[in-house]
Length: 298
Image 1 (cartoon, rainbow, N blue to C red):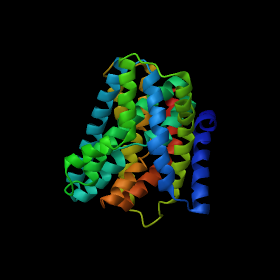
Image 2: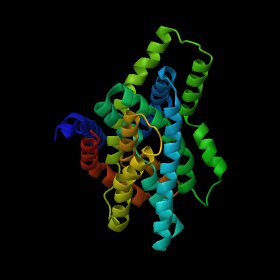
Image 3: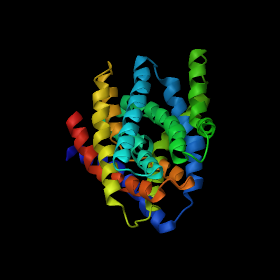
C-alpha cells in the first residue's frame, strides 16, 4: 500500500482533476493539447537529449521497443486469425494493445518511482514510442485507406522529432546553449508533465460509456497490462540493460493503452468505440496492476 500512496495515488489524483474539470467545463482539449505537443513536449525532449550521456543503453532501448512491438502485433494477428475476425477488428485490437501510454501516464509514474535518472530514461522511451505510434499507429488505423507515405509524413510532422535532431546536433558539434536561453527551455519543460497528466484526465472524460464488447476488452486488457510487461521482462534478459533502465522499460510496457491512439481510431474509423473502451478500462485497472508490478520490481 505504501507504493500506491507514494507513487500511484499522486498521479491518479492529477488525472482525476483533469477528468472533473472536463466534466464540469467541457473545455476544448485540442487547444491545450496543441500547446503541449508543439511547445511543451519538444522542450522537455530537447532538454533530456541535450543533457543526457548517450550510450549503448539507448541502442538497447530501440531494439527493446522493436521486439516488443512486433511480439504484440504477432499475438494480435494470431488471435484474430484463430477467431476469424475481420481486418478492421484486428486493427482495432492492435491499436489498443501495441501502443502504451508512456507519456502522460508512464513518465510521471517513473518520476515518482525511480527519480530523475529513471525519468530521463522514461522521456527517451516516450519519444521513441511517439515515433513508433505516429508511424505504425497511423498505418494500422488507416490500413487499406492510405499509404505508408502518410505514416512517414506523420512522424516528421511531430515537433519532438526535430527536438531530438537539434539536441543531438548540438551535442555532436559540442555547441552550448547560453544559460539564459536554456532557462527558458527548462521552465517550459518543467510544466510539461503536469500539463499532459491533466490532459489525459480530460481525454478520459470524453470517452463515452456505451455498450462494451467485453470479450474483446478482456483480451485487450490481458495483452496490454499482463502479457506486455512479461514480454518486456523477457527482452531485458537478452541484453545487458542497466538495472534501472530495465525496470523503467518493464513498467512502461505495463502502461494502459495510449489515449492518443483513440484519435487515430476515430479519424480512420478503425473500431473507435472498442479502442476507446479498452483505453478507458486499461487505465482504470492499471491503478492496481502497476501498483503490484512496482512492488514486485522494488
